[in-house]
Length: 146
Image 1 (tube, one colour):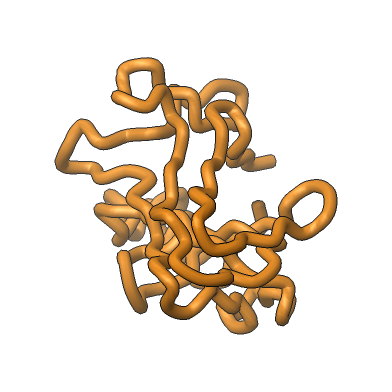
Image 2 (cartoon, rainbow, N blue to C red):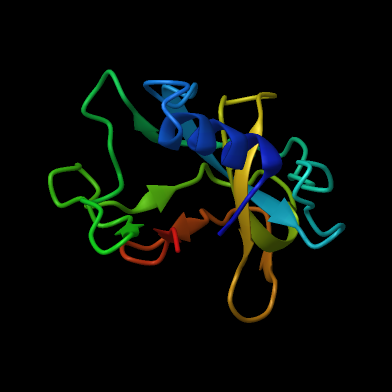
């Protein structure tokens, strides 16, 4: 995943001792269409609109709702075995087409908020048709810092 400038600046403030925690107590995962390519300034991430689409909670620092496992060697994956879905990230059923999904993004809020990081899916874009429930399988979302 690439950090946006906002995400990188938040992390740098922590690493430099200017902040004690990242300013995002909750992080949500969203899907992006292939309509535009996201940019590091946080622009260009186009989410589906309507048809049942909603970002999903990835984790919250004040609850046990953590879908990511334990970081190791600079990486963390959505494989938390203590989470009821073992780290799987379920999106609601599409009530209409969501278009072709090509990106995944991390956001600071369920709606609006700040795009923190983003990545292109491996392989071809995935068309989400009405009646389907998109899922990010366990161990399929990995965040790494190098």
